[in-house]
Image (cartoon, rainbow, N blue to C red):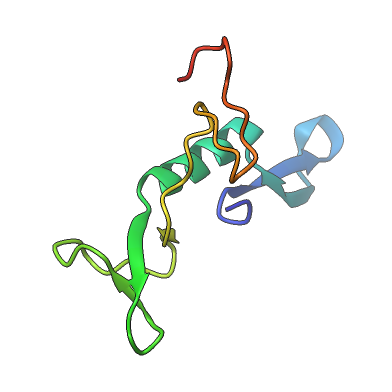
Length: 98
């Protein structure tokens, strides 16, 4: 994700802005942009299951087969707002879950 969200930034060097020499480098996007990108990927993840041959298969056949750049998951993510001792989550007690 970080490589996909890099951009080339350049700076001119020279007398009075003549740009006789240009220096360019790759720069990471902001933490927010990378986080938003990953959140979109997470929200668009496809649920899969392991078939008898040990290969991943889309759980709902009406969904398209995910590409190599999409996220897949086998188990639903736990709800950390609810106490669940098997995963070590104490819940959120008096906090509001979002």
